[in-house]
Image (cartoon, rainbow, N blue to C red; front, side, top):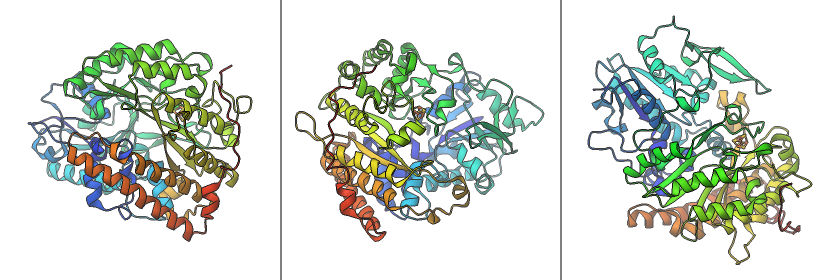
Amino acid sequence: MARFVLVSDTTLSRSYRSVPLLDFLASAPTSAFPGAIYSFLKGPAPPDADGRAALAPYAIRKLEASLLKEFTSDEVVVAHEDHISEFVDDDTEVIGVSTMDPLGLGPLTMSYAVFFETRARAYVQRDFEALLARVNKARAGKKAKLLVGGPGVWELTVRPEELDKNRIDFAFQGEADDIAGDLFRYLSDDSTEKTEFFRGYQTFDANFRKEWEPNSKFVSRYQFSKQFPSLDDIPDIVHPSVKGMTEIMRGCGIGCDFCEVTLRPLRYYSPEKARREIEVNVRSGQSSAWLHTDEVFAYQHGRNYVPNEDAILDLMRAVMAIPGITHTNPTHGRISIPAAYPDLMRKMSSVMRAGRNNWIGLQVGIETGSDRLARMHMPNKTLPLKVGPDGSWSDIVWRGTYVMNKYYWRPAFTVQVGQAAETPEDNWDTVGLINRMSNSVLDNGLPFEFTVTPMQHVPLGLLKSRDFASLKLDQSQLAVYFAAYRHLAKIAARDATSASSDASLAARYVTGAMVGLGGWVMFRQVKSICKKRGLDLEKATRYGLSERRQIPSLLVAR
Ligand code: SF4
């Protein structure tokens, strides 16, 4: 039996049949998508022979590694969700659960809730509640405290009443690599005398300034002490992570005005540190290394966010030189870098062995097709290019996509709906951009490869009240959803057969069929809702296609 038991939100621990972006499915409302299909596509996550998680989300592995600096491997266990009760007894002090979107308030989940005008729970919330029910059953009558942490804790700050409802004793907010041992000891004693921790949480005012909100159910790092671990404080994972995930940096620094990541200090992993973690994953049989970053091209960047080609290529070389690694992809990056530095992309692709059968996925927040909103909310995201002198934002995105595809990178774009100061014209610019790219081809005649997913901003008041149905999308916002899902249906039909790299051939076949059909069914639903709400479907289909603007053949950073 263990002193500290860690367990993951199951929406983060599954393979989703190795289909890129299929993990977005967990954000769908339970009313809009059949549970049996969701469960199949979510895929299995087998335990090891002892009932521990064979693979666990990276955040849990980091927490485990921090605790293992002070406690033994008998005291710290990452349990598989089906085996929690086997590790919990009267000596268990804390059960830690890591979560990303526990209440379904994340922007993707909100995009479905607002579009479908539904108050039905999303799968992320359903699965989180189901997991907590299991944890609470396992600890019934015992002293073990239930602690929730992870990037989704902000949602509990918006709706703190959910803590009692789900019998959560504490929620921890922040990075804990250097203080995990103290935190778990502190919660075990429930000592309120120590000043190492603040009983409350951080929030932000309208100007994105930090505020501290006292609340005895929340624990944060003490306000007047170090707020983030330094690189040296961050331990290497010691057991394998889901998707072969390894961090390469924390923070971003680009400064988009809607993004909390930019407020964190920049810390870069050395190639050696990344290699040590990847080797842990390779030993578990994984051959693909996902490199977690919020902006890969900012890795060791120079002035004005000019990419550091040597540092990026050295890192990629180190990753691909690890015996057993055949594929790697960073998680997030900006589109302006491929647009401005095609040669960097060519070199990266060569090092990463990208090719027709080895596409590199990258999640890219283009946010909008509007020059006005790009300049207003994310002036640095376009750097080293400038909207205006180097073309429109839409031109930069087009060019970046062209370069990425040319070198076998497939961007997964996200766009925002409901941004501050947004006008219908801004949204129509986004529709025009999506349509234009959806109808674009490379020099070899092959169509552009990309996906695009709308993310919804919801005012805090509505998040608190859950009254999403009162938020009505206007015609321009509906048009963004229509254009995005129209393109996704097209991509799903085109790429369905090769979508999954699941180990099982049968699962791959069934998954491919479901992905293709699912894209079509989803678009039919979106189309029908848009039509019912009066959207001019012809306009949304054609918008932006008549203005065949001259694309600058090469955008060169000044
Ligand atoms: S580039 Fe991405 S991670 Fe960086 S501040 Fe902007 S939105 Fe945030």
